[in-house]
Amino acid sequence: MLKIWYYGGTEFMTDAPSYFNNVYEDEWLEDEFVKEMIQDVDRSTVISPHIIESPVLGAITPKELSGGVKVLILMLKDDSFIYNLSNCGNNCAKWVLKIAEKKDLTVYLQNIMHFEGEFEMQIMNTGRIVHNPEEYVTGLLDAEAVQNEGQISFQGKKQEDGI
Figure 1 (cartoon, rainbow, N blue to C red):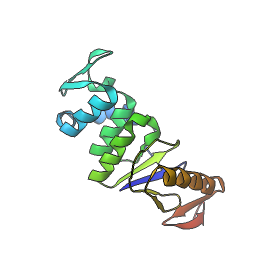
Figure 2: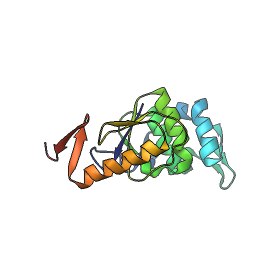
Figure 3: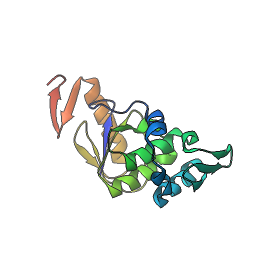
Figure 4: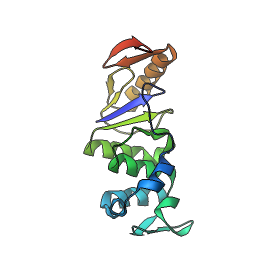
């Protein structure tokens, strides 16, 4: 299930693209799922773990991939941190949901991402589980209101900051 912290409530990786540049492993880029994400998000083809063919930049290394696809790969392959989904564009939304189908995934978000269709995700600030774009947007607005009140919700129970 996808779990989203919206505008607070948790610590998160602040510079995932730079982190990716220092920790990615060759085998990550040999994964067919990762290759599909790179093709879809960056419109680039993985030739080998060290060469990716970009229609705009030509031959690039994994370090030149977009920040969004780097965050997606980290969410899939490295559970060391909660990643800031705000580094990703809306073209990453379907991939976030696909990753969350493969594993429990907790992310941090500072903007409304355009998720489509039916899904299951939990807004961690309030504990609310949402199933479609309308419930999701309402859930984020509720989470923002809780955050603005200086409260954070844990497992659906409101508590004051610092507790």
